[in-house]
Image (cartoon, rainbow, N blue to C red):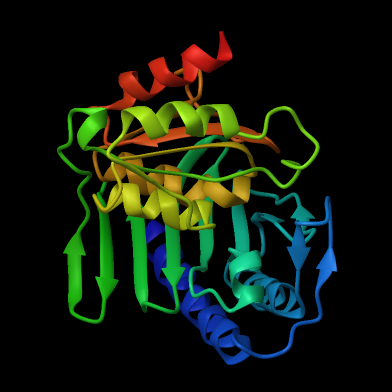
Amino acid sequence: MDLDYALETAIAAAREAGTLLMDGFGREKAIQTKSSATDWVTQFDLAAEALLLDRLRAAFPDHGFIGEEGTAETGRQPYTWYIDPLDGTSNYSHGFPVFCISLALYQGQQPCVGVIYDPVQEECFSAIAGRGASLTGRHGTKALRVSAATELVSSLLATGFPYDAHTSPLDNAAYVARFVKRAFGLRRAGSAALDMAYVAAGRLDGYWEFKVHAWDVAAGILLVQEAGGRVTDIAGQPLALTPQLHVLASNGHIHEAMLAVIGEVSD
């Protein structure tokens, strides 16, 4: 498998989808709901996924594809693309400029290539397994490296809330309350993929969230790992891509401390 070609193809497709999303940003949306009243999809999510699938299928006809908007195809080769055409749909629909495209290529449970593209900031985060992670933006390309923070009290963390927070007891509120008292600060920007990219870039020191989907974090897992960080489930065990995940990503230095705080609530 030519991973350089896979990365180049994914970046080109993500940038093209980003142009589509920016053309629709600020325009009237046709909003539908999926799993709950706060789980939205727009015509631009659907159009972006169709574009991405068209580009990836043309380049890799034997691969599998799993997309947020319903794509589920098994390939003849042991490679699968995880596609999030618009991570941050609620932000996008409200005109809040924090959203991205996330693409990841896996061989079984092993990440091979990851791309997260933020069309607002024109930032492309990318990684190939075993070869590090990088960020290409308006001022060129640089290697990604997680932060050096070693204490929660000096750490900036991010999290999110599940779509069923209105009805589920696992709404993350108790965990947020604990971390507010321990960390330097918390952020809730509304895009799991960008949260993980920011951990990889050292802009955030850690991130946790419940009930995310594989396409939300598949690319971010590789980015964080290749930037020197650590990704596990919330019990500290290796994270397997399943339909729904509880994820913890950090610079590695504060990982055990974050697990301890989570454990205080979970016990």
